[in-house]
Amino acid sequence: MSILSVTGVSRAFGGVQALQACSLEVDEGSIAGLIGPNGSGKTTLFNVVTGYVRADQGAVRFRDEDITGLRPNQVFARGIGRTFQLTRIFERLSVLENMLVATQRQEGWLRGLTRSKSSAEEVATALELLDFVGIAELAELQAGALSYGQRKLLELAYVLVADPQVILLDEPAGGVNLTLINRIAEKIRALNAQGKTFLIVEHNMEFVMSLCDRVTVMHQGCNLVSGTPEEVRRDPKVLDAYLGGGEEEFEGVAGA
Ligand code: ADP
Ligand code: MG
Image (cartoon, rainbow, N blue to C red; front, side, top):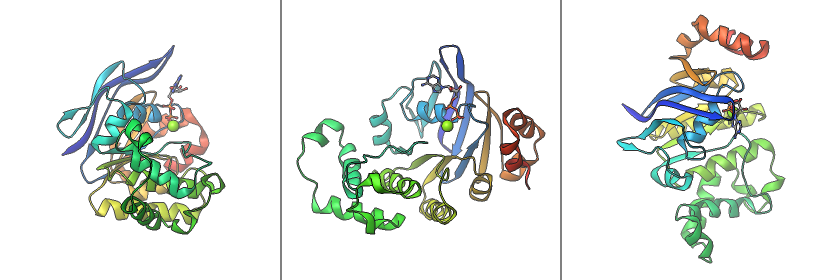
């Protein structure tokens, strides 16, 4: 049973066809991986699903609803949360204040911005989530002072404020040290055990292959192959796609 489905989505930027009739199904309760060489359209697909970029063609469905063309806040409010390849936190706000922005965002920007204070309950929830990802002790720190891995954890906590059903993570392990990579993987597993569905873009093949139930490989804007991590590893089409994209990534996929 798909909770999220993308059907025949295309999107061009000038002469660049970032997505070309791309389709993807994400099963409810699964951890799905999305891999592919740089420039193959992974982030653009996330942007289309979450309303940051409009599709030229095709449709996105969430459960029984056609969500094609909704705005980011509308998608967020429906229960699809996401993180960004380059984290988007407010550097001058404290870690806790960043979390409270997320709380207010759920209500829509205007109401959130015009409301003066967060309730004690909202603060408690924010602290609980920071505790869950393991950075509660940094709550009062300016977010700009966080390490890259800590920012990724803050973004994960931020997304959890809305209690989303589906969580899209764009390169959660990129540039993060091994200890925090393991912590991120552990949190993803724990949330998945609570019923949350994940779609994860990641270049770290060990991370993807050990975490994901199914993996889809993107190539030149299309979904090339979908299968279990083992099936994807063995598929010669995948190796070909990566050979075009560079040796380094190829080794990651082939290294079974
Ligand atoms: P990936 O995340 O797989 O590395 P992207 O989805 O970021 O790939 O990019 C796919 C292609 O679309 C690339 O050629 C990229 O340069 C292009 N692209 C993505 N977003 C934009 C944009 N906003 N404007 C112009 N070109 C874009
Ligand atoms: Mg990307």
